[in-house]
Image (cartoon, rainbow, N blue to C red; front, side, top):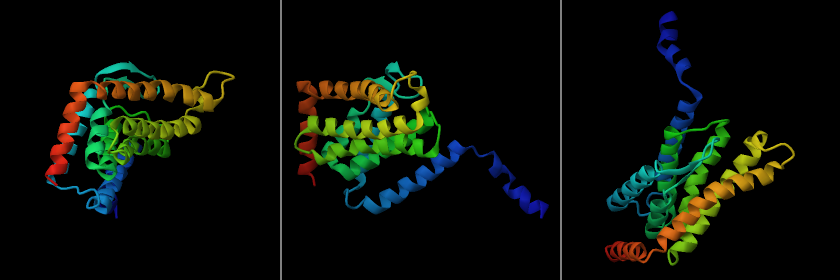
Length: 214
């Protein structure tokens, strides 16, 4: 009996964060298996997706401002995921966004509750995939995906970060102000960068190559 108990005693040392990450990875694998074929998630899409996630993750380290309770203004770190969704569609975008969210969860987590983790690190970043519904207009896609992220983080702010609001300030207004400022600025930066003619032409050229080879 003692031997059997000893086999599992190390499980007690696993932190709640580790369990959340493990569950998120399992959920991610299930999502891929369910929607992968609808996203045409072939080798080429995986290569592009991995590259876009990697570039986004690197850009996330270039922080222009960092909010104490999590969240940063970065040098257009969401843009590679938006571009990926714009080229390959929403399902592939959801997968890439979720992958990026899991990396953020490991990189710089701010955790108050498991459901807060879901809202801030899974659903919020997966929402970037909404850009894939606007495959004829990248700018609208960026705005739509950004609003999806802001809405998810807004809910998290109202539910879990109300105590951080200044005295006498509504948690709703506080969450709108914080997420609108931090995430809204990120989206604005992405829009401005995407509007640069050289970058826009490169994106459209890449999209034409992908569509032509399908």
